[in-house]
Amino acid sequence: MKLGVMSALFGGMKLKDALAYCQKVGLDAIELPAGCYPGDPWKLNGITKNKKKLAGVRKLLDDHGIEVQGIAVHGNPVHPDKKIAQAHQAIHRNGVLLAAEFNTVVINFSGCPGGCATDKTPNFVTCPWPDEFAAAADYQWNKVMIPFWKKENDFAARHGVKIAFEAHPGMVVHTPEDIVRLRKAAGKNLGANIDPSHWFWQGIDPVAATRYLGKNKCIFHVHAKDCEVIKYNEGHVGVLDIKSYGDVKDRGWVFRTVGYGHGDDFWKPFISTLALYGYDGVLSIEHEDSLMSTNEGFEKAVNYLKPLILREKAGGAWWF
Image 1 (tube, rainbow, N blue to C red):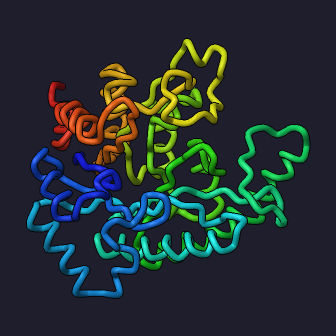
Image 2: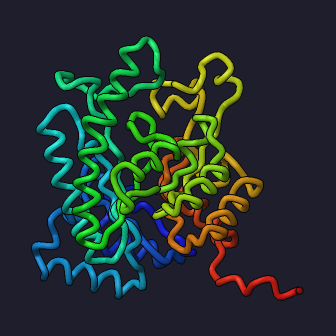
Protein backbone atom coordinates (compact mmCIF):
# COMPACT_ATOMS: atom_id res chain seq x y z
CA MET A 1 0.00 0.00 0.00
CA LYS A 2 0.95 3.63 -0.41
CA LEU A 3 0.21 6.78 1.53
CA GLY A 4 -1.20 9.81 -0.24
CA VAL A 5 -3.42 12.84 0.14
CA MET A 6 -6.61 14.21 -1.36
CA SER A 7 -4.81 17.42 -2.26
CA ALA A 8 -7.75 19.81 -2.59
CA LEU A 9 -6.81 20.96 0.92
CA PHE A 10 -3.61 22.40 -0.58
CA GLY A 11 -5.52 24.42 -3.18
CA GLY A 12 -4.09 27.68 -1.83
CA MET A 13 -0.56 26.55 -2.73
CA LYS A 14 1.12 26.33 -6.09
CA LEU A 15 1.33 22.74 -7.30
CA LYS A 16 5.10 22.61 -6.94
CA ASP A 17 4.82 23.80 -3.32
CA ALA A 18 2.12 21.23 -2.54
CA LEU A 19 4.30 18.48 -4.02
CA ALA A 20 7.32 19.68 -2.05
CA TYR A 21 5.24 19.53 1.14
CA CYS A 22 4.05 16.00 0.31
CA GLN A 23 7.65 14.96 -0.35
CA LYS A 24 8.78 16.51 2.92
CA VAL A 25 6.29 14.57 5.04
CA GLY A 26 7.07 11.33 3.22
CA LEU A 27 4.04 10.68 1.01
CA ASP A 28 4.11 8.38 -2.00
CA ALA A 29 1.16 9.70 -3.95
CA ILE A 30 -1.27 12.54 -4.54
CA GLU A 31 -4.93 12.61 -5.52
CA LEU A 32 -5.38 15.55 -7.87
CA PRO A 33 -8.51 17.73 -7.82
CA ALA A 34 -9.72 18.55 -11.33
CA GLY A 35 -13.06 20.31 -10.95
CA CYS A 36 -16.57 20.25 -9.46
CA TYR A 37 -16.76 20.33 -5.64
CA PRO A 38 -13.02 19.71 -4.97
CA GLY A 39 -12.24 22.70 -7.19
CA ASP A 40 -9.58 23.00 -9.86
CA PRO A 41 -6.81 25.01 -8.17
CA TRP A 42 -4.09 23.94 -10.64
CA LYS A 43 -6.20 24.25 -13.82
CA LEU A 44 -6.13 20.53 -14.64
CA ASN A 45 -9.59 20.31 -16.20
CA GLY A 46 -9.04 19.75 -19.92
CA ILE A 47 -5.25 19.65 -19.58
CA THR A 48 -5.05 16.52 -21.77
CA LYS A 49 -5.55 18.84 -24.76
CA ASN A 50 -2.41 20.79 -23.82
CA LYS A 51 0.51 18.35 -24.11
CA LYS A 52 3.07 20.93 -23.06
CA LYS A 53 1.26 21.77 -19.83
CA LEU A 54 0.62 18.08 -19.15
CA ALA A 55 4.33 17.36 -19.61
CA GLY A 56 5.09 20.14 -17.13
CA VAL A 57 2.84 18.53 -14.52
CA ARG A 58 4.50 15.15 -15.11
CA LYS A 59 7.94 16.70 -14.62
CA LEU A 60 6.90 18.33 -11.34
CA LEU A 61 5.61 14.99 -10.08
CA ASP A 62 8.75 13.15 -11.17
CA ASP A 63 11.01 15.81 -9.64
CA HIS A 64 9.34 15.31 -6.26
CA GLY A 65 9.03 11.52 -6.44
CA ILE A 66 5.24 11.68 -6.13
CA GLU A 67 2.86 9.61 -8.26
CA VAL A 68 -0.76 10.33 -9.12
CA GLN A 69 -3.26 7.95 -7.57
CA GLY A 70 -6.71 9.33 -8.24
CA ILE A 71 -8.32 12.22 -10.11
CA ALA A 72 -11.00 13.86 -7.96
CA VAL A 73 -14.02 15.31 -9.78
CA HIS A 74 -16.72 14.85 -7.12
CA GLY A 75 -19.88 16.48 -8.44
CA ASN A 76 -23.49 15.88 -9.34
CA PRO A 77 -23.56 14.89 -13.02
CA VAL A 78 -27.24 13.90 -12.80
CA HIS A 79 -28.39 17.17 -11.21
CA PRO A 80 -31.95 18.12 -12.22
CA ASP A 81 -30.66 21.55 -13.28
CA LYS A 82 -29.41 20.74 -16.77
CA LYS A 83 -26.75 23.47 -16.74
CA ILE A 84 -25.18 22.08 -13.58
CA ALA A 85 -25.49 18.50 -14.83
CA GLN A 86 -23.87 19.28 -18.18
CA ALA A 87 -21.00 21.18 -16.56
CA HIS A 88 -20.33 18.33 -14.12
CA GLN A 89 -20.63 15.72 -16.87
CA ALA A 90 -17.99 17.51 -18.96
CA ILE A 91 -15.65 17.75 -15.96
CA HIS A 92 -16.16 14.05 -15.21
CA ARG A 93 -15.22 13.03 -18.75
CA ASN A 94 -12.17 15.29 -18.69
CA GLY A 95 -11.29 13.58 -15.39
CA VAL A 96 -11.52 10.19 -17.09
CA LEU A 97 -9.15 11.35 -19.84
CA LEU A 98 -6.71 12.72 -17.26
CA ALA A 99 -6.92 9.49 -15.23
CA ALA A 100 -6.04 7.57 -18.40
CA GLU A 101 -2.88 9.67 -18.79
CA PHE A 102 -1.75 8.70 -15.29
CA ASN A 103 -3.05 5.12 -15.33
CA THR A 104 -5.26 5.75 -12.31
CA VAL A 105 -8.90 5.98 -11.29
CA VAL A 106 -11.35 8.86 -11.44
CA ILE A 107 -13.25 9.52 -8.22
CA ASN A 108 -16.76 10.94 -8.21
CA PHE A 109 -20.09 10.95 -6.44
CA SER A 110 -22.94 9.09 -8.10
CA GLY A 111 -24.94 12.29 -8.06
CA CYS A 112 -28.55 12.81 -7.04
CA PRO A 113 -31.35 13.71 -9.46
CA GLY A 114 -34.76 15.09 -8.57
CA GLY A 115 -37.58 12.87 -7.46
CA CYS A 116 -39.29 13.14 -10.86
CA ALA A 117 -38.59 14.56 -14.30
CA THR A 118 -39.97 18.02 -13.44
CA ASP A 119 -38.05 18.55 -10.18
CA LYS A 120 -35.59 21.46 -10.05
CA THR A 121 -33.52 20.39 -7.03
CA PRO A 122 -31.99 17.05 -5.98
CA ASN A 123 -34.14 14.77 -3.82
CA PHE A 124 -32.27 12.55 -1.36
CA VAL A 125 -34.64 9.70 -0.55
CA THR A 126 -34.13 8.16 2.91
CA CYS A 127 -37.23 5.98 3.38
CA PRO A 128 -39.73 4.03 1.22
CA TRP A 129 -42.95 5.46 2.65
CA PRO A 130 -45.16 7.37 2.01
CA ASP A 131 -45.30 5.74 -1.40
CA GLU A 132 -44.15 8.81 -3.32
CA PHE A 133 -40.67 8.27 -1.86
CA ALA A 134 -40.52 4.72 -3.24
CA ALA A 135 -41.71 6.10 -6.60
CA ALA A 136 -39.00 8.77 -6.50
CA ALA A 137 -36.31 6.16 -5.77
CA ASP A 138 -37.57 3.99 -8.64
CA TYR A 139 -37.42 6.97 -11.00
CA GLN A 140 -33.92 7.91 -9.84
CA TRP A 141 -32.46 4.42 -10.24
CA ASN A 142 -34.21 3.18 -13.37
CA LYS A 143 -34.76 6.35 -15.38
CA VAL A 144 -31.63 8.33 -14.47
CA MET A 145 -28.82 6.59 -12.59
CA ILE A 146 -28.54 3.29 -14.43
CA PRO A 147 -28.88 4.70 -17.98
CA PHE A 148 -26.45 7.56 -17.27
CA TRP A 149 -23.77 5.48 -15.59
CA LYS A 150 -23.99 2.74 -18.23
CA LYS A 151 -22.84 5.33 -20.76
CA GLU A 152 -20.10 6.60 -18.46
CA ASN A 153 -18.98 3.04 -17.65
CA ASP A 154 -18.56 2.37 -21.37
CA PHE A 155 -16.72 5.65 -21.97
CA ALA A 156 -14.34 4.92 -19.07
CA ALA A 157 -13.82 1.33 -20.26
CA ARG A 158 -12.78 2.57 -23.72
CA HIS A 159 -10.04 4.58 -22.03
CA GLY A 160 -8.98 1.87 -19.57
CA VAL A 161 -10.20 3.82 -16.54
CA LYS A 162 -12.23 2.77 -13.50
CA ILE A 163 -14.75 5.04 -11.79
CA ALA A 164 -14.60 4.99 -7.98
CA PHE A 165 -17.75 6.18 -6.23
CA GLU A 166 -17.51 7.83 -2.86
CA ALA A 167 -20.68 6.66 -1.11
CA HIS A 168 -21.73 10.02 0.28
CA PRO A 169 -25.05 10.83 1.96
CA GLY A 170 -27.05 13.24 -0.15
CA MET A 171 -26.20 11.15 -3.21
CA VAL A 172 -28.24 8.20 -4.47
CA VAL A 173 -25.23 5.90 -3.98
CA HIS A 174 -24.46 6.27 -0.28
CA THR A 175 -23.96 2.68 0.94
CA PRO A 176 -21.79 -0.28 -0.09
CA GLU A 177 -24.92 -2.07 -1.29
CA ASP A 178 -25.72 0.87 -3.57
CA ILE A 179 -22.25 0.68 -5.14
CA VAL A 180 -22.66 -3.01 -5.94
CA ARG A 181 -26.21 -2.48 -7.19
CA LEU A 182 -25.10 0.18 -9.66
CA ARG A 183 -22.05 -1.85 -10.70
CA LYS A 184 -24.20 -4.90 -11.48
CA ALA A 185 -26.70 -2.81 -13.44
CA ALA A 186 -24.36 -0.45 -15.29
CA GLY A 187 -20.90 -2.02 -15.68
CA LYS A 188 -17.76 -3.46 -14.14
CA ASN A 189 -15.71 -0.30 -14.50
CA LEU A 190 -17.80 1.12 -11.66
CA GLY A 191 -16.71 0.48 -8.09
CA ALA A 192 -15.82 1.97 -4.73
CA ASN A 193 -13.80 4.77 -3.28
CA ILE A 194 -14.01 3.58 0.32
CA ASP A 195 -14.32 6.44 2.80
CA PRO A 196 -15.07 5.02 6.26
CA SER A 197 -16.05 8.40 7.69
CA HIS A 198 -19.36 8.43 5.81
CA TRP A 199 -20.27 4.95 7.04
CA PHE A 200 -19.55 5.34 10.74
CA TRP A 201 -22.36 7.81 11.31
CA GLN A 202 -24.80 5.81 9.18
CA GLY A 203 -24.24 2.79 11.41
CA ILE A 204 -22.42 0.87 8.67
CA ASP A 205 -19.41 -1.19 9.80
CA PRO A 206 -16.56 -0.10 7.49
CA VAL A 207 -14.66 -3.38 7.97
CA ALA A 208 -17.72 -5.46 7.07
CA ALA A 209 -18.38 -3.08 4.17
CA THR A 210 -14.81 -3.54 2.94
CA ARG A 211 -15.26 -7.32 2.98
CA TYR A 212 -18.50 -6.96 1.03
CA LEU A 213 -16.90 -4.72 -1.59
CA GLY A 214 -13.82 -6.93 -1.71
CA LYS A 215 -15.94 -10.01 -2.40
CA ASN A 216 -17.55 -8.06 -5.24
CA LYS A 217 -14.08 -7.16 -6.59
CA CYS A 218 -14.67 -3.43 -6.70
CA ILE A 219 -12.32 -1.69 -4.25
CA PHE A 220 -10.72 0.91 -6.54
CA HIS A 221 -9.55 3.66 -4.15
CA VAL A 222 -9.54 4.49 -0.42
CA HIS A 223 -9.89 7.75 1.49
CA ALA A 224 -8.41 7.90 4.98
CA LYS A 225 -10.79 10.05 7.01
CA ASP A 226 -12.27 9.49 10.44
CA CYS A 227 -15.58 10.32 12.09
CA GLU A 228 -16.75 10.72 15.67
CA VAL A 229 -20.36 10.04 16.63
CA ILE A 230 -20.95 12.29 19.64
CA LYS A 231 -23.11 10.12 21.87
CA TYR A 232 -24.34 12.96 24.08
CA ASN A 233 -25.73 14.84 21.08
CA GLU A 234 -26.74 11.81 19.03
CA GLY A 235 -29.07 10.80 21.83
CA HIS A 236 -31.38 13.71 21.06
CA VAL A 237 -30.25 14.88 17.60
CA GLY A 238 -29.87 11.58 15.75
CA VAL A 239 -27.52 11.28 12.81
CA LEU A 240 -29.54 12.88 10.00
CA ASP A 241 -28.12 16.19 11.19
CA ILE A 242 -28.29 19.22 8.87
CA LYS A 243 -26.47 21.65 11.17
CA SER A 244 -23.21 23.19 9.91
CA TYR A 245 -20.11 20.99 10.08
CA GLY A 246 -18.56 23.85 12.02
CA ASP A 247 -21.13 23.45 14.81
CA VAL A 248 -18.98 20.82 16.50
CA LYS A 249 -20.46 21.22 19.99
CA ASP A 250 -24.03 20.52 18.93
CA ARG A 251 -23.82 18.10 15.99
CA GLY A 252 -24.65 14.41 16.36
CA TRP A 253 -21.41 13.53 14.54
CA VAL A 254 -18.36 15.28 13.09
CA PHE A 255 -15.49 14.42 10.75
CA ARG A 256 -12.20 13.89 12.56
CA THR A 257 -8.54 13.46 11.73
CA VAL A 258 -7.48 9.82 11.40
CA GLY A 259 -6.97 8.40 14.89
CA TYR A 260 -9.16 10.99 16.63
CA GLY A 261 -12.49 9.32 15.90
CA HIS A 262 -11.24 5.72 16.10
CA GLY A 263 -7.94 4.19 17.12
CA ASP A 264 -5.94 1.09 16.26
CA ASP A 265 -8.90 -1.13 17.12
CA PHE A 266 -10.49 0.10 13.88
CA TRP A 267 -7.67 1.24 11.61
CA LYS A 268 -5.53 -1.92 11.90
CA PRO A 269 -8.36 -4.35 11.05
CA PHE A 270 -9.54 -1.99 8.29
CA ILE A 271 -6.12 -1.86 6.64
CA SER A 272 -5.70 -5.62 7.11
CA THR A 273 -9.05 -6.25 5.42
CA LEU A 274 -8.02 -4.11 2.46
CA ALA A 275 -4.87 -6.27 2.15
CA LEU A 276 -6.94 -9.44 2.50
CA TYR A 277 -8.82 -8.53 -0.67
CA GLY A 278 -5.69 -7.57 -2.61
CA TYR A 279 -5.84 -3.79 -2.35
CA ASP A 280 -2.35 -2.39 -2.89
CA GLY A 281 -3.29 1.16 -3.84
CA VAL A 282 -3.23 4.37 -1.85
CA LEU A 283 -4.70 5.46 1.46
CA SER A 284 -5.51 9.01 0.45
CA ILE A 285 -5.72 11.28 3.50
CA GLU A 286 -8.68 13.65 3.47
CA HIS A 287 -8.68 16.35 6.14
CA GLU A 288 -12.03 17.81 7.26
CA ASP A 289 -11.52 18.11 11.02
CA SER A 290 -13.03 21.35 12.36
CA LEU A 291 -10.89 21.15 15.51
CA MET A 292 -7.52 21.18 13.71
CA SER A 293 -5.74 23.40 11.23
CA THR A 294 -5.08 21.98 7.78
CA ASN A 295 -1.40 21.34 8.44
CA GLU A 296 -1.81 19.93 11.95
CA GLY A 297 -4.66 17.61 11.03
CA PHE A 298 -2.95 16.41 7.86
CA GLU A 299 0.42 15.79 9.51
CA LYS A 300 -1.16 13.97 12.47
CA ALA A 301 -2.91 11.68 9.98
CA VAL A 302 0.38 11.05 8.13
CA ASN A 303 2.22 10.22 11.32
CA TYR A 304 -0.58 7.96 12.55
CA LEU A 305 -0.89 5.96 9.33
CA LYS A 306 2.78 5.57 8.41
CA PRO A 307 3.49 2.67 10.78
CA LEU A 308 0.09 1.03 10.10
CA ILE A 309 0.08 0.64 6.32
CA LEU A 310 1.29 -2.66 4.88
CA ARG A 311 3.99 -2.06 2.27
CA GLU A 312 5.43 -5.52 1.59
CA LYS A 313 3.78 -8.47 -0.10
CA ALA A 314 2.88 -11.25 2.32
CA GLY A 315 5.21 -14.24 2.20
CA GLY A 316 2.48 -16.81 2.80
CA ALA A 317 2.01 -19.08 5.80
CA TRP A 318 5.68 -20.10 6.14
CA TRP A 319 5.24 -21.69 9.58
CA PHE A 320 3.65 -24.96 8.38
